[in-house]
Image (tube, rainbow, N blue to C red; front, side):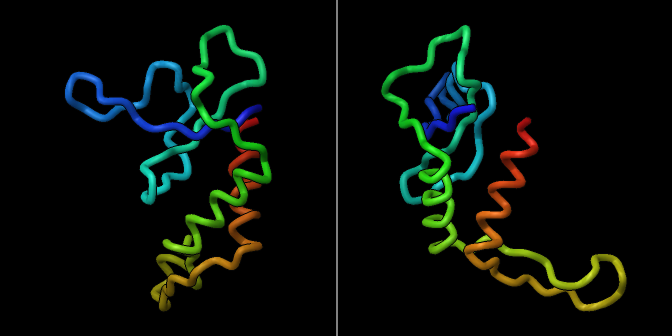
Length: 107
């Protein structure tokens, strides 16, 4: 599996994922309006060579950079229990675990 950084395209006046993006819209970076897409190692369709391919380490670095500006939050407490729910910023280790869990869901 490969990870790519891309920007949405303006299609019929609306920002949309380009046709070559099959599994995209992940890990939005508001600093440069980019997203991450996932593609299999071998595709039967064209992926532009202008895309930035990210290694697993580069993906982690990207997500940690986003986290440093807009922290990912976790909930402390049990939802719906009537108790107090508190949003707490994830640690860097929790963010990396979050990315790993996302990757494992991709198959």
